[in-house]
Image 1 (cartoon, rainbow, N blue to C red):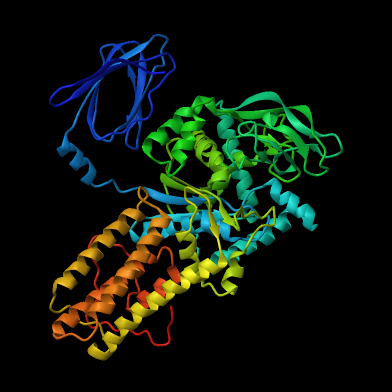
Image 2: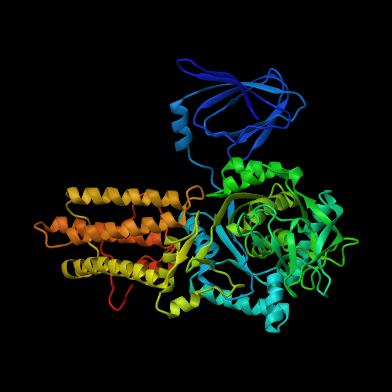
Length: 629
């Protein structure tokens, strides 16, 4: 534990302190608004620092290191002796202001990767409220900021949950996967999900090639080890048991689990599963040794530390990753015994198949390869969306595997997890039959765009939330009525006072100036929420809702009979500009409705969230006849 050697020294302009780290210890990640100078008195160690492209510097006695504001840093004693360090820090407001206001570098191409959906059942509303709509929102939001962004979706891969569903339904694995993949595709189109790639088992030859290249790279880099460990085994004819074929208790929290712990989300090695039971015959499993290849994660913990310092983990994920890093990272097996999966192309392992946790990397690389055949990519930034039960695979396993494959080509800039979306207070689950399907909701009267907005409003970002059909219907109907009222007031003013065309802004009064300022503030808030650093679906839904109420209040008050024609023209032009801004901000969430609304304003180009408020040109017609929200 870090020892403080001297109380803080407070001078007029700076503070100073002295501390020590035992061998192997490190400080916590720090990132503050002060300048800081480090002085090494004795011992050796390292400091990892930076604000995106992180680097590590070795520390020796006599070294001094200056770190500017907002430079994330972590000090570690990687020597045998006590590391004694002094530090001084001071405030420099001018440097802080310059750092905050400095323009960020134009990003590389961004690829959005929501968790590939397991094709063992139809798409339900939990999928929507989790990765599906959020990832699509993010992709569209990036495009409104003028960035190149592509979304990679699919069902590609082999999961034991699908094999169990296939056996229950009397179909082959491929038939089952194709049937539910088609269902997901139909729902994506129904809900306006704009994917650039949808990878399925139709891409199996490409997937096999990419997986072989991936495993060969890991093998050539000496990143694999072979060892024997015990595995649950059914002595009543079902053999070695993996993932969905076995259940037991989590050794970390005691929760009942199958392949992953939905309670603590920590990885459970096969040999550590408590009280294993075969899911086929419901009898206690025995233990048998099995020789397998593994990827040791512990030697590569620096990969996770650097992502943690870069701020890429979002919401509850930083705490989760920090908790994982408090213990030794495990060895991840490459293979399992399964009848449905890719055979391991490694000598002596031909009777085993690729483990789904390791499959994550080849799945992404296959989808990226599909996209690269149509678009030039080069080095890319990745943004991940996933459920909290997959947090270990996405936040821990995947980044390390990708780093081992090609450390220079991919950089993850966002890990966006979500908690469980519930139905009647219980987790939605295809395998447990506790679901409400997405397309059923649209058939029951909830339009697709408004359903997207509602699941954003209730998204379980950091805590579980629950879906209620009655609450959803009432909430949506109130907003639809509000938008209809706004459009009615504006179109009536345009039609009756300005012959169906948008007027030039006339004479402004206090109410107009206040509303204009309000629109500018909403626009800047939208730009912040659309960025990778500020992205938050629930806050975007709240912003859309607030702006809709702003519009309704202004249109109701300002578009009535006025004593001065110029004042009414200003109110009408501002109302139309506000409606355009609302449609632009809402477009990532409600693409169909907003595209149609912008089209009624004569705007055919893709929505673009500019720095300045965009007006609708005077003389442009605004026709809402025969159209409803």
